[in-house]
Image 1 (tube, one colour):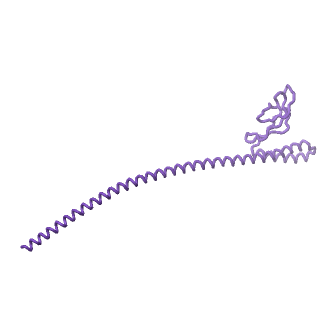
Image 2 (cartoon, one colour):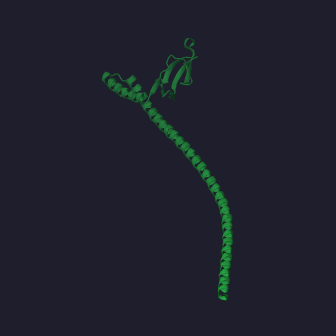
Amino acid sequence: MEKNDKKNIKNSNKHKDVSEASELLNQETKLDNSNIETDDSKVDADNKNLVEKLQNEIEDYICVAKRIKAEFDNYRKRNENIIEKTKEDAIDKVILDFIEINDSIDAALSMIKDETSQKGVELIKKQFTTILDKYEVEEINPINKPFNPELHDAIMQEENENQSGYVTQVFKKGYLKNKKVIRYAIVKVAI
């Protein structure tokens, strides 16, 4: 019986050792898990801060991108306006050159006595008039009309009580393009 008792004691000790070891293992696991939970909460807090920081950076970049887009749109519109104005100014200069030629044609017409030559020059004059009409250029012919400083440039005056304040002579016709003066009429005004 002694052998069995020893065996039982040994097995009992083994069970005791195994249960103690199992209990120790459980305690260590709990400690490890609590460390993990603590680390997880720390990681979660760090991740949350990082996510907030990144979201703020994204919002900042979006604001910068929107500002740059708006500035570029303004730049593009401003340049379109500048290009359009430059184009209009260039057209106006060319039209003024045509108007000078038109003035020369008018002077030539007043001097030509030959009817055939006059008809030929009148055809040229008609071509110029067609071009001016195409670009919406209107002639300002202020003869016997009230003087208007927005349309006329007076270079001479004459005494005439009956026509006081009226244009009595036109030295150079004025022209409007799209209702804007591109050349003032050079006139003599009665006072």
